[in-house]
Image (cartoon, rainbow, N blue to C red; front, side, top):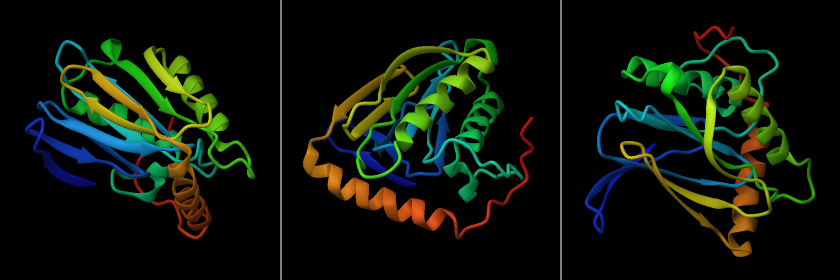
Length: 191
């Protein structure tokens, strides 16, 4: 995760990468770039506590546990649980959580449509847990840059052009190829 200050807005910004999430109560911005990955931007509108995750694949079928900084957050089943738990620990109320979903683009046309599976997982998780989706920009063939302001709930989405597809697709391919070589470790029990 990279922290910086946006000179134009004068706001502290956290850039998250695949397998990361960030939660805040402060007037900050969280941003990421998505291809087939999904980011859930989630907040409690009463407390202003909000956060964002960035996951690469839908489910770790071995589901042995994860920690906040673990590579296990590359999987949706860990990334969603860890984000929701961090929001609740920061003072959010479960019944007020609002979800905004982004990503799931098909940017690697020669491989399995991972974005489609990620979208399916995200919808299944949200509806199974009884949460509500208030906004979304998912699917299609575009990578996206997401700027999220958790305190207000505002999201800015920029669809990136095809030139970015090749570099993002190469980055996602490298990440996917490395996933199999790293064990999933941690101490969170999924139920």
